[in-house]
Image: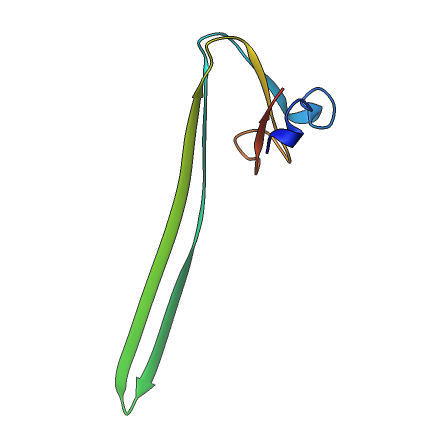
Length: 84
């Protein structure tokens, strides 16, 4: 996604954050689904349930000052994260 890097001062300036030397950025996102189904056949109850969750985590350790920004909100809530 490097084609959008370098736009934290313009396109995504509303969500830019400056990280200092020896600081870090942690971001976690996830999604999933849950479904349940039930039925009664001739007085016998049947029930099934399933759940699936997927979590993505990443951490960036900054050795020098860096500007980062989210594409559609603050970094903890944004879909993507870019560097200046």
